[in-house]
Figure 1 (cartoon, rainbow, N blue to C red):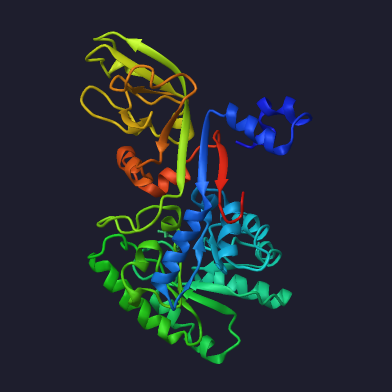
Figure 2: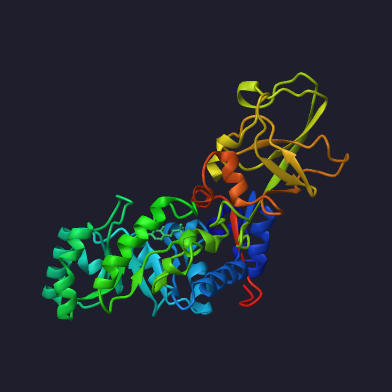
Length: 396
Ligand SMILES: *Cc1c(COP(=O)(O)O)cnc(C)c1O
């Protein structure tokens, strides 16, 4: 929620200070998404330490995995991060607005006939195809632009990148010097699975070709790749998800700190009789006299319908009054019902906050209930929440 554009705060605008406005908007918000910038920075430092002597960059595509690109980029730059990756030139422009001197790479590459969109903001395309490279070379020759570009080499993902053979064709150019290539990279397909044979295959392929790109920094590891060991770390690592608290080692405990906390408001308490069906479809039946808390978040807020429960399956949990309580029935667009029968009477009232993420409910746990991965939970976080950025060090 953009507080300034929230109609509930407009009438107060002229009367109250910005702090009071923010407090008023928070008090009126249906949900509050808190991003812990100190935890984010601690996560970046941990990854940096794990990868040393490699440089640790930060992937901030998709609005910094839903966490908000401007505050995230500012906090990481202040912590010492010098290289950032985004997906598109628009994302690069948003990052550049708060990163005056960082190196910014655009993972999805060069958009046809749009070289100046990169040069204007000093962003570097990650080039994944020979036609794209030819076009970039023409642009650089015509304009004199020498801002650098990365070459992406496919080592088994079959998504973006030159084939190994195509990349070998560039070796004479690299050896001739003045080649305009500032990074050579590839991307792991199965890094979150420690023992997947693909990891060793991609490592061997990348090591071979990267060693021919003499003098060009090399990069292979995403978040999970960092934890595959130092052989995978090369000169620069590219973590995204782990910065935001997603477990990069799903087969082991999460080494990262949680960054996201999500709370939504209890809008009503209601008692239903034994035998009543709850929610759309009525396929969650009260098996006892039941007390429900109706909470103001739903699938339009990124709380996926797949977290619903019915008579056969338990769904996601929500924390109310310090206790885990199960979702009752289908998640609807803007609301969900939570079974709070086991809470002591009067522990929960209208206006109380329910914790949807946080207090032990992790992004990964929620992803499990939603039948997806933490990445999708983060990038689906809704736009109706008031956003709060917490940091002891910047005081924001
Ligand atoms: C998204 C992305 C990353 C970051 O991956 P995480 O798994 O989030 O750490 C790194 N490299 C490339 C090419 C990507 O597309």
